[in-house]
Image 1 (cartoon, one colour):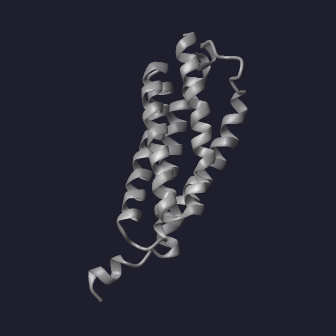
Image 2 (cartoon, rainbow, N blue to C red; image 1 turned 90 degrees about the vertical axis):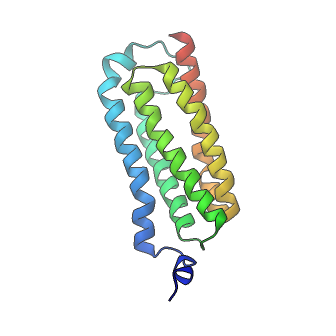
Length: 165
């Protein structure tokens, strides 16, 4: 068996599942470590717009979005090898790194300004990831649409907090 033959095969189910969950779990852990210690008193003390959801909304929403991201990435990792798949994987890894970086920038650094810079990069990377996923697997690409929508809302929220503070 040549390496070309092997590389044209999708990852097996278990390796793909582990590879799909690992970066998403890492981003979630980094995000939680940056966020939770800074909810009080720092975040609590910020002026927020009237459409700011209660803190209890964020956990369930992010849990669902992380599950969708992992499932979508799993589908891409199980897709046949090719330039489109490689591009989709790269975009996914860039956006998930930016996802973790946003929590560090906003909460860890106590900086709505840094958060705004990162989230603009993040939403751009998510849009590119959706496009790349759609080229490989339409279901995987569609599974990221709620994430894109939530981060669009989070961008407005971040911008509003920046403006008010």
